[in-house]
Image: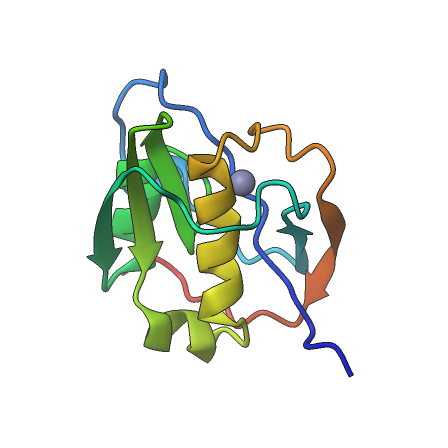
Length: 133
Ligand SMILES: [Zn+2]
């Protein structure tokens, strides 16, 4: 049986001005939309990859300037890609597969548009979101 693949739909808004973390963090939604990248973008990235791992989802959302708690891509070109990810153990604590979050972001490095065109999307329920500290 094929492994269940779920990736968090992330918002890429690099042109938004910096603000408080709470502006970007979602407030305990009943579900989030997962988006698995289509095959043409779901492959290794050949450019220079820069990955920053976070131990706090609210800091991640602030630095991504988007209401994500799992990851985002700040900049992507065929030669260079900057990815921000929540630490694997924290993604697992939410009941998600960190590898799938990684594949989603890597697909953006491979020019998958932020519209997530061609992705498989469905709701992921029962996430254990935590309130900001
Ligand atoms: Zn995305």
